Image (cartoon, rainbow, N blue to C red; front, side, top):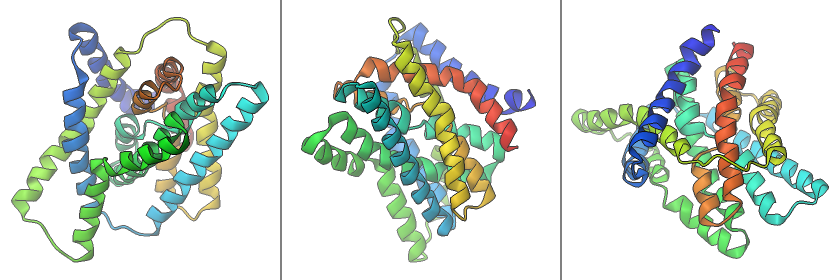
Length: 298
């Protein structure tokens, strides 16, 4: 229970504050989300890559992300074929199970559980996951040739992508930035995590209850919270990954469905009610599963 009170509960309480504020005030999330996406997250990503030493562990992180993604996609395709579900439901299941909330849920959990070194890995992982989500998530939501073109545009429209490029370029050419300018970046970066946590709570407050397809939701929740970290564990055994990074990746893989993916499901009509339901239910149940996983990993 110590892990729950010291690691999980503080994060859940921040979500709860965002949830309560949204239920009370019914605010427009677009301006706040825009600031988080275009200003705050790029600042956090830039600081992380600018200060971190990029080595082979980051290559293993990319390999891990792709192997996990394709393993979950194959699992869903097999399940949909066996159950004889529709193509649109297949898209909804892939969206709700293959993409985890590594940013506004995973990063703070890892920070509280394992400290600043692990947090640097977590931020790097959320960048890779954002790129994967913006490409494959959009593709499976839209499908077909249009989906590919839209997915490519989505990746290059993501500010964090350019933050990584600029940070690595500066490091590669040994170019420093003035201390006062970096302090500005640092201030914004520090505010990013609590802001996106509150935004997640507000997003969850907008999901409507009622008429849940519990059979399909149960499958998706089990895959997202239990099967995904199990696959992640096997992948970390197969790669020469640093033990701390391995914990970060396994915990990240055990995160609930990404709230961002609900936007794609709504935009492209890829079973939005099902996807949003899985996001909400998996976030609630993750309070228990993450606590247990953190206890197992130590």
